Length: 334
Image 1 (tube, rainbow, N blue to C red):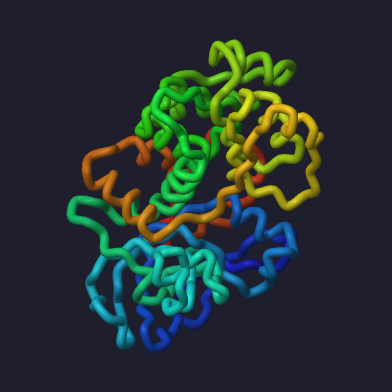
Image 2 (cartoon, rainbow, N blue to C red):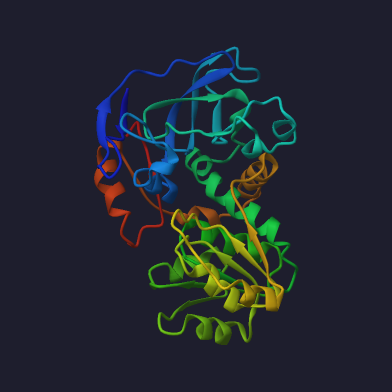
């Protein structure tokens, strides 16, 4: 099969022919229909802490068609599924509770930048009638955002500030409005995603590099009840603490692999709750699919392009720099 393959850290991907995957017992082989390029994929090609290297195939936001099943209960060739990209043991208390991200054997499922990939049966969620395989490939970031909103304990009428207009930040705007937030302001350093943010549910969009704290306060008419940090850049947790109200919540979703710091007394004096968020539960993943099936079209606005495998190396590198792109999907089969 053909795949976009890592050549090592800090090196561009290349498209190669590699061995077809073989399913272990309880696994299926999927013909990958769509796979999203995630910001964490970019991190994996830059930072050794993720353990990725030459020969690895990225891609954890994918959906496809079952073409082979090896004693995979409940699945058969021809089934269309969205893949929960978290491999757990399937047996422990966390897995049984629908929280495989906290299984001791947890591993992130990759392989979506290829024509075929394997997955365990319990990772595969059948696509509801009426949803496309492209819909199945955008569920992962939508579920990540839902998990963050749930952890934030957002109350109806809350004033929400979202730092970062990437796919996660925009998906947070979608869920925050559905949770009853009265104001949802997205703040970024560029104006490119303004229209998309409003389409996703934001009530305002601000860009002010000189006075980000003051700009947000003016837009909200005061401090935010909840600030979602969705960028992962050092300094933004400290900024979020300044932007949230007394006894408010800072919810950290941004993936930052560099050292960061803030003055604890600033948060302590306001009794700010700083809550981190990673991944999602199986229930939240299924909830995200159900919302699309029920008619919510907003998450589809995240997609700004679909490319073939041959275009992946160049487009992947371009995403290291801020562009008008939001979520780019790969169609490995063309």
